[in-house]
Image 1 (cartoon, rainbow, N blue to C red):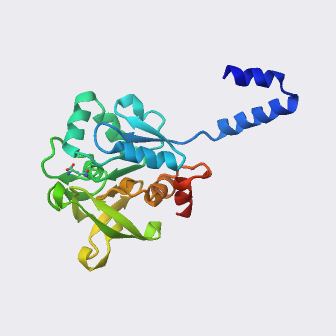
Image 2 (cartoon, rainbow, N blue to C red):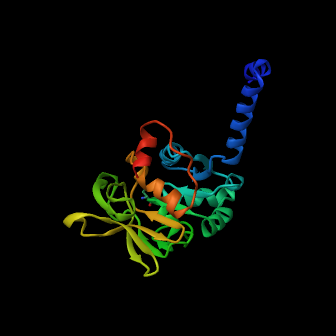
Image 3 (cartoon, rainbow, N blue to C red):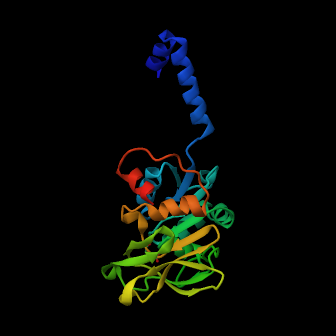
Length: 241
Ligand code: GLN
């Protein structure tokens, strides 16, 4: 920092103007800040996906972490543990208010938190997605699987990674199904839903390296203005979406 200032002091007027312009541009378009619930679970992979798309990912563990966020991601993990932890540290009320008012993406345990009911939870879920969810509906950890999905919003086929995944047992007529299992085996079962600014997925897009769903959520659902993609493999993938 000191070295940069010293160099600037000796540089000509043109250099200083260019620097000032650069600072103005940076100030006019700060990176959007999107939260990732970080009590437990696979929040780091969501952070990586968001950062690759040019967003500042903010870990949310305490009420004050919600300040100034444009949207939030609720990751996979253990919904029972997350509900217990947020009850213990005071995060539940402000987080519930946030997901009622702001864009939210829930994956796996996250869709359990967003739905209206699911068995065996220590507290009610947030109820912002009018779906009923059956937890661990495909079996135990060993029954985790990958399956092709059909997601028209991101251009068609998408890799589905299911880990002790929940199943959507009831989807209200007012809720849009945005993702289905493809092919005869999957028989079109709904595995992703959207209700306005809230999206719930039974699978884990953050584990695939495919950024199309995060990109779609941020831009189309949440209305987040992403910075122009820079070079690099992740940015190129996001661009292709
Ligand atoms: N089985 C977990 C639950 O009930 C969800 C699994 C996951 O998020 N991968 O919360």
